[in-house]
Image 1 (tube, one colour):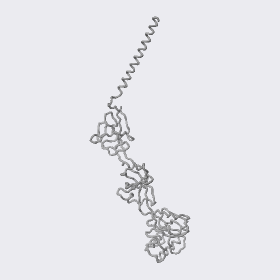
Image 2: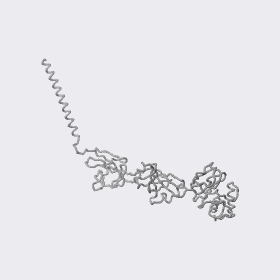
Image 3: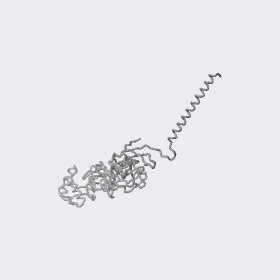
Image 4: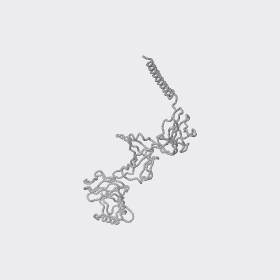
Length: 371
């Protein structure tokens, strides 16, 4: 190998040594850099300070459901007519309304406490006559007051009524044409046998009317029942009326549904003195809100901004430092506090070692970050 070839070989070796040295320096530098960013064991990780602005708001939780008003109905009269049912008219009825027709004979409801039990004609006396007279007065066929005596005036009124209805003017009201209902107007049901086309022989339950008892219930699934605490308040609404109810008892049926029996806060009826505004239907569905967490309004901050000292007092960290607060309500990651005003900035996280709040801020706070 000549002299020139030896110089070339020496140059190549030197170049390789320089490349290796540069690579080694780079590896050492990278190792040094990476190691410096990893904290030693037990050393706290530094965190950026996160701020949130306190705002006016509220917390609370409610579950929109439907409650049911049940108004039991019982038989108030039996049918005494024979023949085929040609028409039925259940539902809401008032004084003198026809509820069903047998052949061409209409059966009407009349307000009265006692049942009709005989034909009503001249000479009859009693509560059933009084109920008939009230009907005739309401229809405009009888003047004066109902005295319970079927005299000449009542006879003329019955004939006038029969004429107005297009029926034979006998002056007698046969048994079966009138049915007494204690309170009218009312929503009535008909007995199972009172069906168009059904042949009646007499003795069938004819009309069922509400007893006046009311039962408010909330029927929910098992999953919904788990969300409802025993002390929950239920807000029940009908039209422009709203009533508060509480859970009086709980029943679980064979299908897994839970029925909560509801009463007023004082143990009385939910509707109190306003029950008259409710329909008389056997079952009424009502809008309801189950208040799981009562609504609290005020200054709100993320729950993660509220810290607790060893003595149990609460505070937040503001631009001015620690400020004592009282928590008046919380839910869904938000706390309502007394002690600061809306617009105050509060720290949610910081780099100080020590326990941090378990909850992170959730809707309701506008967070900003200072590097």
